[in-house]
Image 1: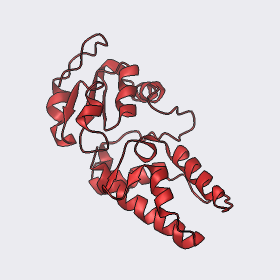
Image 2: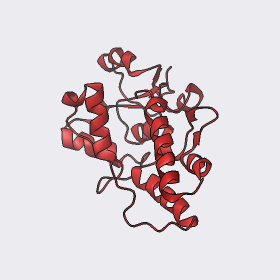
Image 3: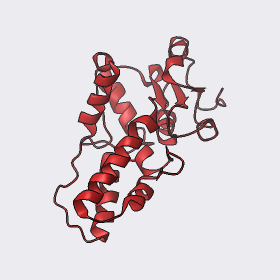
Image 4: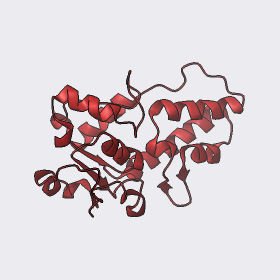
Length: 197
């Protein structure tokens, strides 16, 4: 929802550098390929880093390291919740967040399954028809659609472009700064209607 590339490209680069330095293996390109990060384009492409859970990313990277003869024991920690909270604090919006739900939480099911969205609605005691999912991937918007949330909003400041998001989004906005007029005038969810743009 914030600029995905600004947040995750430095992480991918630093992560790859740390792995290369600690293993003495020059596998930077393989790490980038695993994550679906294009160093040439300076963009995270749709795929594992953009849409996978921390557990899925960790598993893929562990497989890569094992394939290169590196044995691991809890070498990659699940930092999803602390990373999310840190990002929210950096953005100054943590005080507005009542629940942090990460894809690796116990009982979570990866998007686009509706389970996590419906679970959050239950925890907040709100009708799913009154909920909005705002996302930058097909998995985000697919979750909103399958959960039959009130509205799905695609954000172009992330990984996927308009051409990817348009078939799943009721609205597409350039960034979250344009979200409030949509939320304040939210249309009812009707799975039979074509998405508006």
